[in-house]
Length: 473
Image (tube, rainbow, N blue to C red):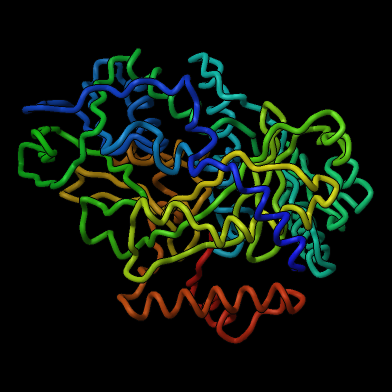
């Protein structure tokens, strides 16, 4: 990029707060007190993000008499649940393509369950009065390179063949630019019902309130540090006490699991995003008005996701997926100026008509990824502990499904969910260091080369595809 353009991108970031826009909200609820001393309950939920919140809520919906406790190491929604893009997808498999490649015999059932799951989220938002700007506006996968048009055409034809294209529409350049206007857009595939846009932090806070109203006891700033079990149940040690429970559901995702043997199945990847100031009427008109308020994502391996907020800001995120040697987790890594600058440059390449627009927030954080890009499930401690992890950036919707799976497993129920091959199987674990770091770096560079080479995958990526290994954001 030319020095003048780079300076312009840098200037657009000069006043950006290093904080998730969603969490920078005066309506943010006060935290519940920490646990001190000992507690007893029927079900202990560890983790106060979507995974844990849905588990606690559905547990009480299934059995109002069940005594449920939820603990959270920080504040509810402070991590990935409060800093994501707010794309709430029906897909349980990180997209139709990944689902077809991994579970071709189950894909129709998985898509059906995913649609029912998204419907249930919409119903819960209405039932509990959760004010989270929920809009079932869909998502458009846009092509910015000629070979991506062919990929989108093939995906549409595959969906048609499976009877899954009812709410999909292929868009040519004129049609996609009538929705959102960028000179880089060559076409798109619009899934009109399979994705909702929402305010992610407000959803987490609304679920917290719903849980409290149903009688869930929530302790924030209460980290679970150790888990043990015997014939009578389980015990989880916290900073200032212990919790004795008949059953435990782990919704810790990117953070190290209390079931230590599961730690090699996920790695933390850092994802980053920007939020603009609100667009005025002239600026909004210059990009076509964003008529139907669909979310967008480009079709590259290193992709951007972007959407418009309720107050007409543009969230722009993705592209870089950063893994640090040894799976390092640190709040220091939440800010990455070189990535923010890169994202700003890419933003103005996509929307040159918005030159001069400024970003008010720039933030990042870790998500968990696994080698099959979508969640996996299981039990430990003779069935007294259940876990779900590996959502790979698509957990806003899928975590509700994962909550139901965990509760089915803990209750010993045989359901259409627990019979799925997706639920009964595990991804391949990541290798130990330094092999994990080297493999991820080679994969990232190969993916970038594929984007620059008409989508053609090199021998490394083809080998990874063959054995079911991968890396994604």
